[in-house]
Length: 63
Image (cartoon, rainbow, N blue to C red; front, side, top):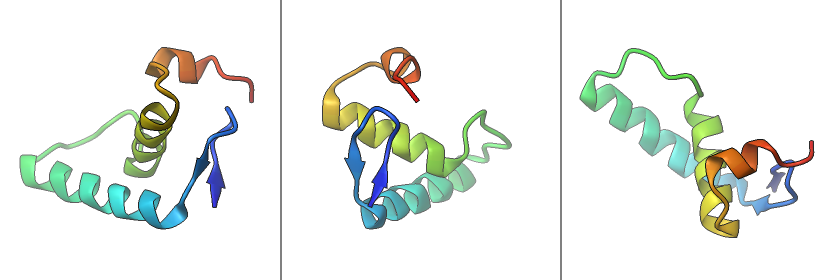
């Protein structure tokens, strides 16, 4: 179980699944780089879906 700094519990298996799918999608569209790794993007996406905060609000969460 991974925990986002805002206290959101995230299943590691779901995080791995989503990270893999994001990497496959990036490869399919020919994306050369992203600011966040696929794992970090997946974690933020799952945290957003779980608590309904925007990415900016998640960024300001206590660490």
